[in-house]
Image (tube, rainbow, N blue to C red; front, side, top):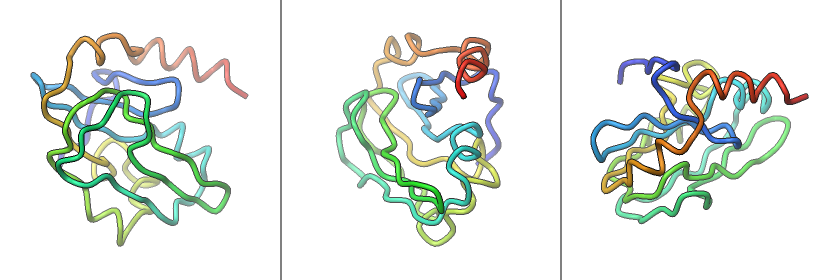
Length: 130
């Protein structure tokens, strides 16, 4: 997968990103999140075919510092999962907007994605965090 342009993504307050193309979405966690977590050691991914609800957990990411739920930024059906992350979760630290994508969804409500922060709003949000 090619690296996403962070300027074109939409973001949650919980530091997930979503790239929307038509009614399909790719989901990941942001560089801000992976830096805050530190070295990522484990990831629990959703199963293909699972219907996700926006704002609910789709998986878990663990690092040397903490474990955190990964929340679905939008609802939809999991169509693809980045299973390479199971063996090499550190890729999330190395390429959060490329090889570190987590899953893809179909049947996405575009309005949910458009309601999220754009890159400028997300950058301002991150500056307010400790």
